[in-house]
Length: 72
Image (cartoon, rainbow, N blue to C red; front, side, top):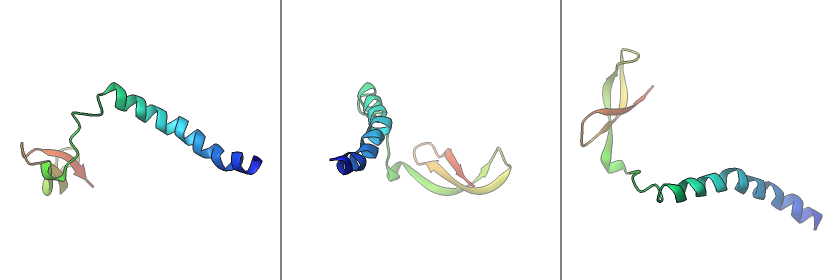
């Protein structure tokens, strides 16, 4: 029985540390209904980063053609 508790203990702690906050956030935000995780809405393109003044890769929104994130 002690071996089983030593095996299951870290999993239970991990569930409390990570699982409960994620489940609570999911419940409070209606299942992240407004989050769109789709590769069809963005593309990778070359753009100039205004913070570093260097050209590089950026994730660009297809609907607005505005860089969403810069890849260094």
